[in-house]
Image 1 (cartoon, rainbow, N blue to C red):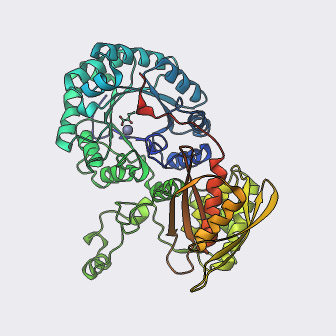
Image 2 (tube, protein in one colour):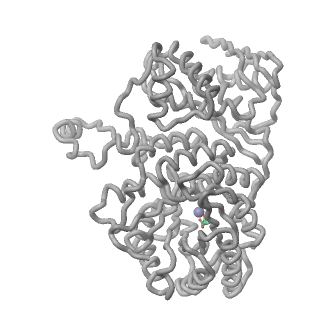
Length: 519
Ligand code: KIV
Ligand code: ZN
């Protein structure tokens, strides 16, 4: 494969697979589809949608993404085991373009301690897995897990063998985030030069951020011949996360002058909406100073900077906020806006409704919101659509009414009415604060036996009339779900979010960890 300046850098997003492996970040099938649609609009080349053998839920997630996405390749992960590969092949059956990504560990410590296999057996198993995957698709990726701590000579042997067996992409993972940029870049160069048939496959990298070097390592690899980068929105992922998609894409785009390949095919204006969507669904807030997608990423506070930017933007800005999807026009709609304006603005934001009912539901929520809040911003619209989507999923429990009394020197009390399986139920509870009282009242009705793991409130826009966006994380029997709710009243937003989480936790799903490895 050529390494010319015209090369396209393949962006492989693994938010739905490695990102989802982050404790507490599990996603429903519908949430995966929603994120995948945004990634498709961004023109991400490959979307890794999950690990089909892990659980029925994971299988269905990959299958649903494969059935929905038409323009990006949809990928499923599989250990180098027949049963994993068959399951991935089955989940990807309906994909327009499907890829199987199979892996086996190659570092001495993993082979000896985890797999208890000899190096030659590992090669044999890898070759067998790639051949089996080729029975389902021509697009097969192979990863030597923990490549960052593997011996380069052994990597050359196994990679040469899997290319001969039919692997079309070779992904080099720094599984434990141990490498540093110069060393990792050199590893890619050594492999490309040392493997006789290396020109028959695309080299990819997959870096974890344990030392905060995932993006730097990935970019160093690109400088040394990698033409696919595996990354996630907001850098979501196990432990310290994976390389962040937005940072990789914007680095290559902004420094066109030095990178040997391009990301011109990526529509970067979808980056901020994707970041919001992922953060809303997972409950993982984005730190304000996070590059590209943090709230302060384009804010100039100091007088000297502001003065410079006003005189000439390029004095202090290297990218345009609009290019990554920060909206320049603030107030978008108000109380008197009609259905058409509402639909049009959402279309501009990349949101499409699957039915007239869904549009009507969102529009009626918009009217309610416009009664409480005069200026409706893009962020409000996005939160409203998220809530409309949430509401359509498995809603056994719904908030009907909530009255909360909170007074200095008095114990707060919540009076709640819920509709549970169509039947209205009432409860009153007191608590340490109005939110605590509300959650206790809900529990009096539902008795879910869940444990609250996270409660967070975020203001969607600025101003005291802003909507509060609440995330609640609940755990039951090892299963963790996130719920979201938004409202100008944060106690109501909290109740909606708690109820949303309860509606999700009723679906049992056993999960198996991809790297647990019984290979
Ligand atoms: O980090 C890792 O090694 C992985 C592999 C499955 C590619 O996620
Ligand atoms: Zn990983």
